[in-house]
Image (tube, rainbow, N blue to C red; front, side, top):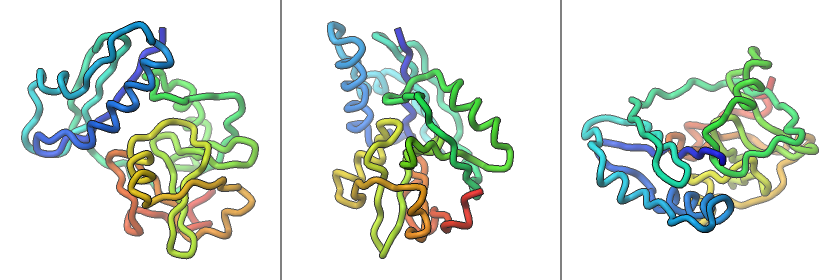
Length: 199
């Protein structure tokens, strides 16, 4: 039975975008635990002592029940250089708690701050985030990402992002790349220049 993880941004006691985290939990249960009652993330947070000041990474680990949680003060990771790695047959369709394969791939590329998975020449995700690419003042995200990201899903619903295949061979056609997750908003300020950021 796989173990799953939800990482929620908590700011001054407020838990952000829980509806999207619940959607991902619903999908995990539908695929892996179809006969079990679906966990409710709002009810779980209501039972917890949530930090009221500052920015925190709430890690919720679960299977058919909540296994444990922790609140970690958020510190942004400085990412400037990205290495492209072959996805191969690796699959990460849900936010599994086991990230050993991802960590191994990162360790193989000390020249970079993070990695980008690429499957058959199509870019997917970084190790910590979904991706957005800017072209002609418009943002695009890979049509076939490695995993279901809540921020990516929200930005698609808000029509801020558009899905398309992002080919390695066409990176020169894009001006910026932005790593997006619950802590990393989509913006020019948070984006890296292309192709300078690829090593």
